[in-house]
Length: 640
Image (cartoon, rainbow, N blue to C red; front, top):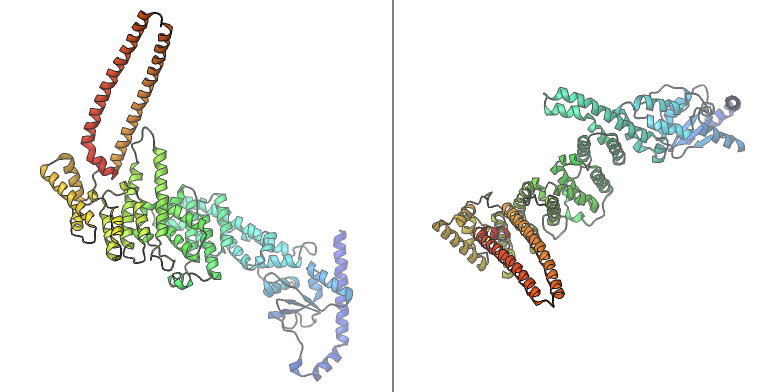
């Protein structure tokens, strides 16, 4: 109550000062008019005012204070301002201590002079509409001017807070619009009055509500087209694309905490990336003259967008629904814009998890290094390393006595990647700038069982030899040694036998194995005939696949380990028996008869074991030799 009376007294005091100033202006009106009439119109000192405040607010009452905001002058009246604004009241009180105040300046006013004009309209009681586009600016202006409830009920701060809580935060689209307007306001003030925080939480909460509604809408969309289903799922995805990347990041993180589905988040990330990065032109990005120059402000912003989107990608199992084309597009953007190494490595890791599903066009990433190959071979090499590491980890997890070797899915993926890399090698082979070391590195990184036939590898090497005629004979031999002549089809063998670019040693090997193949085909040999038929047709047989051979070898290894374990147990028993024999020899040394009797028993036991063990070993050796004779060629093919 006392505070309210004190404010009333201060208002009466300012009103009396206001009326006194009006009387002084009336007494000096005549002298001012005569002075102004004697001066030329070009020398007038009337300040420039904006919009409706060009001269005065009221025609019958002259303004007594001029406030400058961002270079714009406003001729106003003290009384309506000091009754609502604590900041202006303090500034006027400070100035009145020395002399009468007529000019004030408000530096760094949030929202600029247009927002200040709306705040002054509120002080004068003029009608204007609060919208989603000006409520954040008005709220910051009210905070700056200290227009609190202390000076008047339903002041500007409370009015804007009510609008935010009751109108804006109840709707997702309005919350996005308000959050986007916060980008032009001082960040410290926006965070202090929690407009950004409230908008972010409101967007996430309303997205969860929409998710529940869309779940029910899907029941009605089952018989509709895919376009209708997409609209039912997440119509708000496009709305988020207007946000700045820092605000967008906060919104996506809040959505993840509140339970928004990962597929909606992924769709939003893809749409935001396509919207914000669509202005990047290929001519601008792949211009070699700009690789060494410092990045522009736009490129820095785009790099921040790429890095943020990669960090926001979900890490759960559903993240596998991210299209590979989008991941490769982001990887190319990251390379072009010079993103951080962790960002690029994360994209490479995600791609390598599904490398068997990648197309050849995706792997053709242009290189930015001047004087280097046309395509980025190092990135493809890292993708292969990550893929092979995953295959090894899966094999280690599946390893056990019940395992049949490499799983069908893992080995099938490896065969697909082998074909993909052979096609990639053939595509980059004509590049004259491609070094032999990088070309060989891509060949030898894949294991032998990743290629059932070497026709694709032979074609890539032949193209490389044709494009790089300056290779020495030793380099040609080094390159051609990766081709297994036994894995070439009939057509490839015929071509290799007449290829003068190949080393003579390889041509001889091709002719030799071709003769063996013809000989086996004529003689009708069962094992070699099957191998010859498989090789000549170029189609791998399921019975002779490297996976089956590898699984067979692993089963035989397990059987050998079990046999060795049995022999070790028997050996330990013999050692114990030998210790007993030695002890008996020492105890019964004086009794010759007993000694020889014990010795003969021991020798008899050893003889029985030796005969049994020898018989088993002979049977095992005969069995192993028979198996080796039957599957010898199959093992050599698998391990070659």
